Image (cartoon, rainbow, N blue to C red):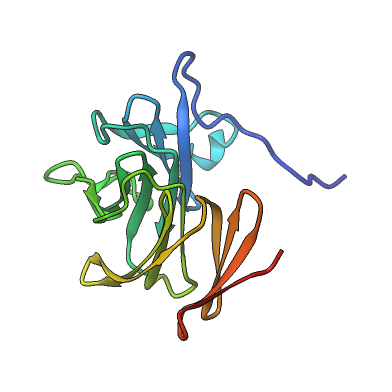
Length: 194
């Protein structure tokens, strides 16, 4: 008999509401709760692989607003966050539990917001993890990662808020309520697909 899917309890805490989670390595998950707490979770030892994961570090008041989406940038060692106050980033190395042995950071991770990203509806990064695209109410913002920060490159107007955005080579595909738009970043042209 083959096992197609294995379900396991990651955290067993009645009343705790997880908003977002991202696996950053095989034995490490970063998660956020509804009260703005950031959790670093470590997998149980192989001999106890069915038990809940251990909370290695909990950073209270990490974010003023609940973080609704997390994205790990493996090539840079940063985690991107999405909340109503904007898209932010923090360095994973400042959080305990990275890898097999817990880190003992001198101070907890601090969240740095990317400028002009208040009230984001969605975001994505390209395959090389060097470009960030953020949809806000009626704008599509493009940022480039350089020396630990995202710097603004371009801004495109949107007819309505984007629900989802994805990279496709030099193009961005933006899903809106009624239409899909394709944005060519080299020529700065937009076209409607559907």
